[in-house]
Image (cartoon, helix red, strand yellow):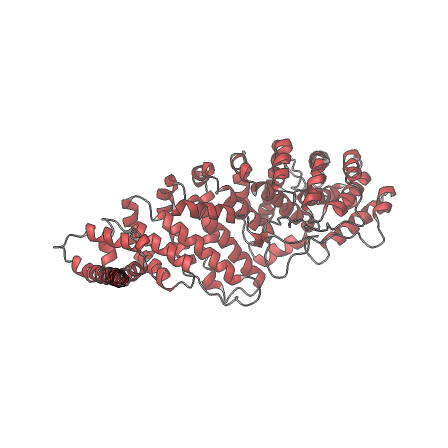
Length: 590
């Protein structure tokens, strides 16, 4: 019952308040207004100037339109609760119905740009109730249709470029720029040729507006998913897969040196728009994943887990940090559903992908990580990966698989022992993340320790060079957090059995911790973890065994202490009875 309760707490804790961040209202580029956008008719150079203005306004400062908090790393931006007394309004926002109608009626390039620009101004806010009204007005459906139009247009233009390249090759022209596969986001179009580059930026802008709309309530997200999820999910997966594949192909084609790889990324004139596509598409998936009823259909949707795995496994720096954290967060949330746990643990390479960031020795790399943002990314990645492993460890069928994974067990122990960082004290919440990671690591070890006896023996004898019991014992005694100490003690209790008793009695410190903890357990905790572990060890080792001599002093210590407590309580009861009898006799004499 205690373990089940902890599971429920963990599941609810997946949508934590530390992933919330307020959103500021955006502003249009200087010299532009919503009214002028609705009546403008851009052609030729004016059209290109409009796209450059949109890009400059969005990527000013080198980041997202939504300013990131200087004090924390955001994974999924969940909406803040609406104010109870007075709702903030948009002074420049167009009516919702007018904005949705503008998106639905926009087909040519100029109208599409204007419609999405106005939608961005109207929908990018943090008022949950207003987002509910936007989806009720059909904003999600309009944007989904708009996204499908852009994908079709991007693919058509790419096929046209391929035909032109084939024709040029047939006439002996240079065909070095020819591509072989139609790809809506794979090629870098010629910005001077017209709309090619604009389609990539339109995709990013549309995903950005759609993500803003999904900052609505959970019920509204579920309603929207039931209405268009079967059409939207394949598009988001396709966009993300193609962009990740494009980056991997470009990296493979470049030289092996990191400097040249960075140079190639900088030479991409659409890198900001492509980053925006990845960040916002994964955020939209994250908004779906925060709804408990959607976790099972999401996990079983064809290609989604593979898509997330590709994002997580990308080399550091190849995809935006926020994109990788989003993907990890989604996997951790999907792993909360009991119907998904076994399937996800058996999904090809998914477990290995989670072990990657979880096993990274951040504590040994602190001196070499010269940037707080890089450190926070590594720390967040490990924290969410450990959380995902903990969620998967609940399924009884997974205990055998996970407990036999050497790097996974080592990652849990390494996280459990990582208590203090030199990067703490900068106001970025490092200590809180370390504590949260230790809690999840201790819970995961407790769950894995409930594996069959053969696996318990392997864990105690072979895991991390036979130091598993020593590290868990150290955590049970020395961790500054009482919850972590409690979970570590529960892990020792689960590991105690007839096949591991010999490993326990060899460690005097472990026995001492169990004895001291048993003394602190009250009468209503007679079946507590420490007392239970000692009883298991006592039954597992015969009295004529030489190892019993190592265990007996600790058993006697607990028995004597319990006897003294019982004697004191009995004496107190006798004194109370005698006092009551004397008072009754005195009252009778009177």
